[in-house]
Length: 403
Image (tube, rainbow, N blue to C red):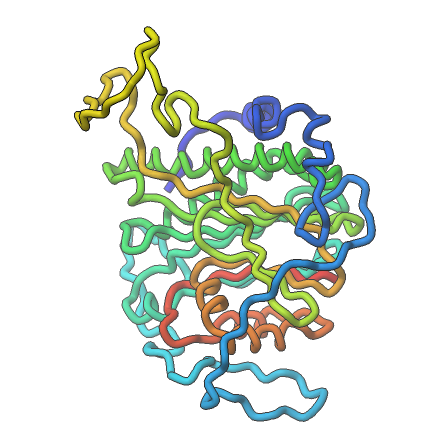
């Protein structure tokens, strides 16, 4: 599907600059963005304009669930590498381990076909990147396309380059869900690519306020284009949407700041000292007292009359105001300073859910990914495909190893 909206690259680049200028309450002045309130501790997953020695990590690890004694693994000899596994847990998964059916193809829309598996990787600065997106067992069995989309892109060159990884998931059982996910990744990639120099500069300078506000607006515009596409196809807005989760990784080896932002379900984890930490940022919440049009109604009329009774009569919709749209997912944002030996994992819900719910999967991946050298592409793909009974959705995983 062709992209909607046009405009020259210069025009879009100017628009991105306006995101910062129009930041409003999210950023305030440049001085406010660089104030003590906007600096945060590296151990808490934040950046600081004046780097200091990392403080003690206070992030709790994932809670351990007692393991089923039937699922215990044999003891390996000391120093032996961890053995890849096909599945974890006490029960076998329902579906076959390999694809059994292809999605139906339209001879006039062959560009719409989605491969079963996508695999990518790179090494820039102090980090090594591995990324994989795999069709879930359920979709493989039913001959449905992969709803997860993955985009890995480098913009610029040398130490001033910026790497973007975008992960999107289309709405379950919705027509064209795989197209919506792919379009969300492409539109985000185009916008970041047009402004990569400014973004890389803001990351190095720890301008957290500007980054958060600008990326929030950029995400809203990207998902807004999906809603517009739904209207053009005669679909409900929620029928042609996608979750969207992204990482920005500077290629500068002196900059260890990693920026996460996005909307929707999934997971953000950190493997540190052999233990998993769930560092998914909290969703933005409304703050402050009620204002007109938001929160509680006013306590009196403009003429000064007190409102003391609610008769329960519904107010008819105003012909001058648009009907309220469906509730939108909250925006999530986090910047963190990586330590040597850390592994950062961004994943779709298809991997985040079993990682949170199955202790043995956490233990297996921690053992596999805590070795000094990152796994190769084939080994990483095998690790992301370790199956768990009851979890059969698409899986997309992006892992970053810090040298």
